[in-house]
Image (cartoon, rainbow over the protein chains, first blue to last red):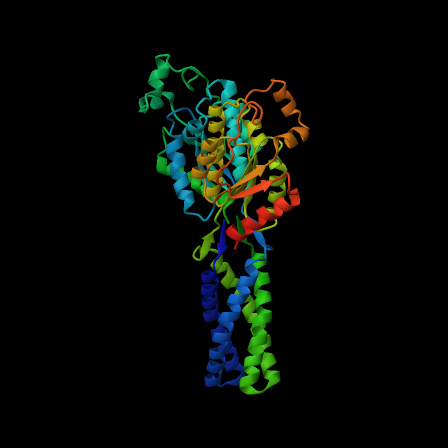
Length: 241
Length: 241
């Protein structure tokens, strides 16, 4: 959230003066036909009105009326591990930061660092997602939009998020499991395949595909840049202006 | 966060016009000595400039320059159970909401509902407090101030909060343990005294008094209203304007 500084009010005063004094000179000239007096009237006006404009701006700084709360949204990236959620979400976040909206990035790994004892069973995952929902809702209460990326394999937890937050945009990052296993630089799939990781989505735990995702990104046929462009366009169309 | 609506820009245009056209009429009258022409010049100006002022406002809506990020603060209420933390914090929150600042209320019980499995051992309490610190820091990133009330009996966890957040104001709600036991409408002290609750602050777990609280409220000698007034005054002096 921002508030107008004194300097801004002064700059607006000067910028306005250029418009306004030119108009005054034209009006006085058209009425009296005397250019010298018109310019003189303009000159006096410049000094008096820059000060008045500034004072007028400072009065309005304290008026709440006529301001609209910015409507927050949540981009919810879901998909199996290594599908590209975090990469695409990071890029979308970076793009959206260029717009003048309050925005927060939430990623699975940051939250799991804070709550390390949470497991990967169905019940634990669902509870975990509800906490994320609470965090997003708190941010939304303050007009902050979010870019969130979580495997979130179960329909019920994605539905819980949908019920907890406003303007929820489900973005399904679709990727072939074979491709993800190839991309597996973290070695997580390998561990899961060896049976060392339990409840690993795609290997020994299911991923329930979203039935009504708002955007589907098929990473097998679409580049990261293309995906990012599509998502940013979607957001700009619906949630800015 | 707010943005200026079209209506606000129009209203500012009209409000400015009243100031400005009166000035123009006076200037033209002083220069030409003709009141009728001065009023005519004023009349033409009114129409032309309300429209120009509105256009000028809409241009500035897109300019970020000269806006200052609001500086967030955190009020951290600490004290033994039933000392009056929640009651005083609620009242302070309500008072501060009247100011035009983004503000969030965080209470121990709301957070424990979200993370019910967390215990009351020293380690668990400290970890719990770190999560709260992360939540407050995330809100502060977005210029949102917080009113937080937590027993937070250990110096180390209060110190952790202090290191994680900006403009942290420690408010120690001091109350005699006997008074708190009398006030015990929740029956928690009773349970603790019977030995049914472990790690209950004040009974079978220590409360380490804050050494450098910014504000100390002694509830044995101070009313809730008085306490609230002192805290709100402190905040207004430091963190508004």
